Length: 341
Ligand SMILES: NC(=O)C1=CN([C@@H]2O[C@H](COP(=O)(O)OP(=O)(O)OC[C@H]3O[C@@H](n4cnc5c(N)ncnc54)[C@H](OP(=O)(O)O)[C@@H]3O)[C@@H](O)[C@H]2O)C=CC1
Ligand SMILES: O=C(CO)[C@H](O)[C@H](O)COP(=O)(O)O
Ligand SMILES: [Zn+2]
Image (cartoon, rainbow, N blue to C red; front, side, top):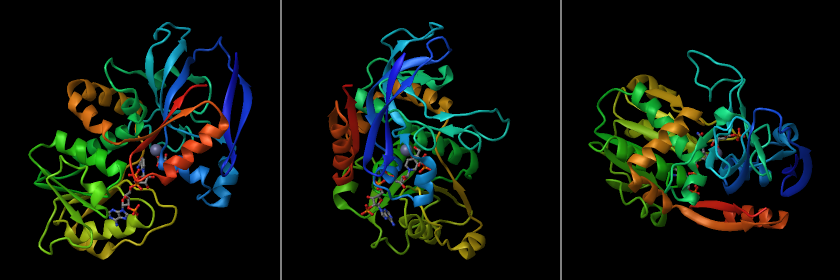
């Protein structure tokens, strides 16, 4: 079957290319319907990754957050027209200890191999998860980003000691919003504090117990555990601020992506006996459990709908470029491309 893939060939330049899909294989064929833009896509589109990385990874179809409709499943597990979320992480081996999203052999769509900017995506069947009825399409489109927070919180629950009176989330963007919302749902007895830069963004965190500007944190404030959801150079400053305000033996989750190494106050990590751990991406099981969580807590989906930002209908390559430009100029929220291809 003939397919069209829309690949970024160099920063800001997307080209279409025909490819062939083998309909005799075991893949589930999915037509993308709603694609959501991640900061990682923007780093490729705007060319802010180092030249050697761009040289190695491009040409490549962007987008790793998407839902679509099944058009053909040779095994019949999925009905034609069924709404599904596509899982970008694709493990190539199994390991008893290391989760699929940390295996160095795993492939991740839109970071080394083609993402979802295609007319039809041939998906390995274990990478396709049915979307339950009644979940808003625009929220479902960024299930992957929410699954990252879901995964990070499971890691936190396994690693952190049991005193969880105050949890601190650094950042006031989408990842911080989602992480703090899921934390509040999962640990309703804990106070969830937000530490950010922008009043208009922190105003949206209505479910949080307190919000603080990072340059006006009360001297005597303490948190038991912290989550860094900032990225870039702010990763370093926020992790160091968490180290300043965290109680001894607390855990710090690093989620933000920085292109450059960041200096961290290791002396105080030692003196306070802290645990600093990274959390990246998610597994197919995280998607499955999250969608079940959505079913049980529809109010979470309602909260998430408040971060739907720009919605851009895409029919042409010019529309794709427009969507990335609209996303980079936005004040906040998730940009969703409605794929009218
Ligand atoms: N671990 C993973 O698997 C994933 C990681 N990410 C990464 O997470 C990071 C956050 O993503 P996202 O929420 O979408 O990004 P945003 O840029 O929307 O959010 C970051 C926010 O934090 C603010 N900020 C900057 N410095 C600080 C600081 N020192 N303390 C507190 N807040 C600060 C920023 O303000 P301003 O813009 O003014 O600087 C911005 O509003 C990115 O690096 C992204 O790539 C995303 C998805 C998955
Ligand atoms: O967004 C992400 C997951 O949702 C990750 O930050 C992304 O996978 C990082 O990839 P890359 O190494 O290509 O920047
Ligand atoms: Zn992402």
